[in-house]
Image: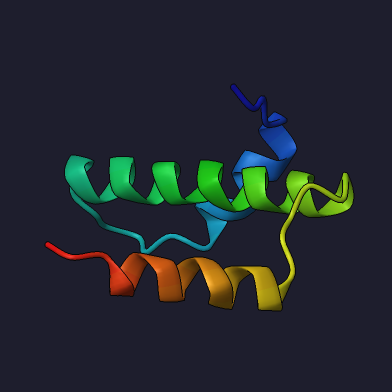
Amino acid sequence: MLMISKEKLKTHIDQFPDMLSIDDLIDRLVFVEKLENRITESKNDKSISEEEMEKEMQEWFSLDG
């Protein structure tokens, strides 16, 4: 589980619309968590290359189903 500082969270929240539903708020917070996770992974060299992603996607789309 990734932790996020209040300051980073405030920065993201300041970009939200003035009015939004609780469902939209939850969706946006989940997105913020995913975004922060990807940024952390990238900084720690845990991301995959574009070539690796293309290979994985080809495997996904070639599955029989």
